[in-house]
Length: 229
Image (cartoon, rainbow, N blue to C red; front, side):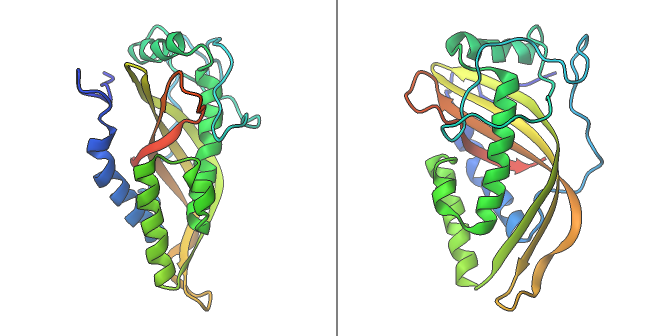
């Protein structure tokens, strides 16, 4: 049974899990392991829906102020399911919110955040993260720089991107996406020698929470929490 990401009447609760979740997330990344190795998880396909099939919604949202490029179709929850009904509340509040297109944009954001963190690209990260998450990422990058280390990350494939949960409290919306990806992650010293991590491709699972204030002029869904799945 799906559970809400929020406690009743409490507003957005992402902050309650932010520090622990992001801390774990960053420690794992600094050790060149983005999550834990798991067996391949197929995207969830709701009853009556064939793989790749998606309900028809309105125009899609924007992440980082631009439309995402075309990507393989990702199945979304049935609008008549409990999770689908929560997504429909966001659609009703913002007709531009379209779950299939949101997943495409979220995947693009996932790729950019992972690679920008590895590259220490603060400018790119600032446009895609909430203020608190950005401060945490910035501190982690600074610590890596002080140790004279650099991080190498290659996303070989995003195997699945599945909407796990969603909620709308007032005009504040949040959507949790589970990403399963094949990646190479390792840290290198100044001579280019591996400090930790591996050249081997590893399958990783991440749960990312994107949030946005509906009706605001800012169209970006920013990463507000992250943890290993």
